[in-house]
Image 1: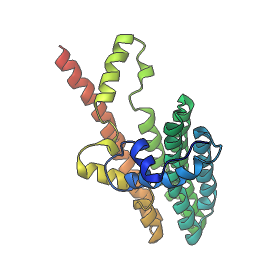
Image 2: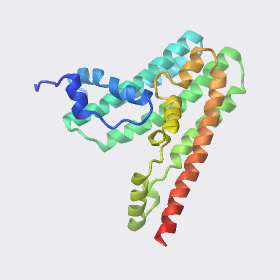
Image 3: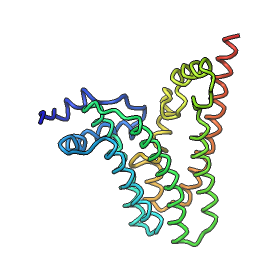
Length: 245
């Protein structure tokens, strides 16, 4: 067996470029500690991806049951599992074990777990308060979250190879994702709102006893993000086509 480098060396050689903000880079930084352990184990990167997805899905069951301490503790585990989310990439880069299915699983895990989190939190609130109105906030948040993902520019929409090449340049030349924006304030806001991140706005809202307000905040924030993304994607294509004429 090859000697596994020290964590400092692993971080130097296999760190990915983090987004702006604090919480997401913190997860990327901490991921090297469990990654060192996983490098001694026979887990493949895809199996590690499945592991963090399963951890999150299990915690959703307890969040849906409600109860203050159970919800806070389960939400914390859900978000800390995002540290393991960074492990699969580190292991893949170290072992040079790259997989298209790995990327697919990763995105499915994020979209599935985050959308179900919004539903589970509403179920937990309902089980404690009997408030049906909270499902409106949960429905808006879940719908706009998934719609935002579905309406992100997709190369599969473009059958013409020339159009597809043009769109490839546009997609990789622009930071469509809010968390990838270079502007400090936008990236910090995105970092603090991102449902995966430990100790984010959702966690503190639940911790201090305001889960209903937090769900409405996410319903508003995700709706605004959907509008921003649709307009921004239209605008970059519009600018490109004007310059080409």
